Image (tube, each protein chain N blue to C red):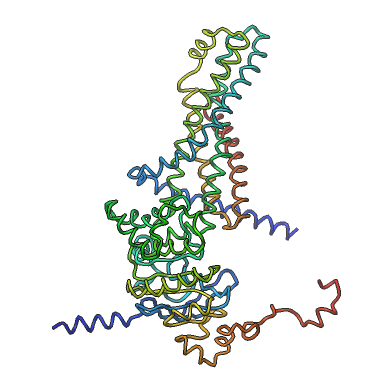
Length: 281
Length: 259
């Protein structure tokens, strides 16, 4: 008799947690996405990579419902984020965590209160239970001893770990990481890499990592999407991308200065420009 | 000529867009005020920040303004042998005009600029975005308590300003220049009307408090999220608040005291 339940469970697990189809988004005349399709499978760490300015952070904001696409659809756990408003959107966000690039800790609260913040806002748990939960989250990121520090007293790496503890405070189904490794020393970077993978597996999360730090991201990502000029230019596992004959993938993964992403900003011909004289300047 | 008209049109459109955004934000803030009475601790914290921390500048300014009024008033009244009316002159000047207006200008400089900078920096450091992603509405959690605190703090600060000013006037008039102590207080008691003078002053300070806090919050929330953007927003708060207070003061005075 349990067969139908198992079947439903398997189907549910096979359905991507985030499903993006034909995503179009522009800021004024600047097109950021022009027909992007992305699937983020449950329980995986999916990396969204690409050169600076390709809209990776914008993509996270679109998934979180902070921005609305011009066209196309974004579904999170079957819910159309692009159409949700008010309470329905906030109910979905309670099940999503996000780690911002600089941590975005609330500066008028200490570490403990920052992590307790979502619990106090959304639950009626007694303070004793909130304390236990906060200490558990802090233990998971190795900062239980730093609970009385203010955000201004934390290093960049510590701030991101606190923000990570806050992001998982409500036991979300997914966590989005916006450039988690940027500006980190090798030790902090190593700690964050390990934490993202460990927490994903231990808490059965789905993780979306936006980054351009190739080595660290490839080390933990189960699947990688490479974005450029508003489109997905390559996708696959780390090994598949390494074998890929895509010029985009090759240039990005090997850090080549010239290629599909040109070294030179668009300009008139060099000789023509030099000979044009001062008037043209 | 066409270009000038186009520029004028752009400036006009920009102005009305900002005005529209400011009014929409005010509506959202007002919708967030009633639930605050169930979590009044959020307001109390902001009352400390915008009210208690503004006390020193209000007390010192009120004292000196009252002392100057006492001195100037005495020098004029003594020519007519009416120096015993000094208490009335000082009190009416303070409760009708100087109390609400000067307090609002000081409030804009001290608390308004701080509100704009704080909210602007919260926006620049993505704290407001982080709240949204934690399913917490920053308008209700951050802006509404600050608005209510500013709204409540301003009349109290204006009252304190006027009270201290009256004492400053007494110190100069009675203490230094020899005006009769009993005349100073009794004439004030006889001539200052609770409704016409004090209540109208309170209404002014309530209006100024709401407007200054609204401008400060809107400028912070609408600031370009960079250090330069926050700096410009802070300047705009002080300038716009000062202009709004002085303009509204004329309108309110005409409505309250015009025949």
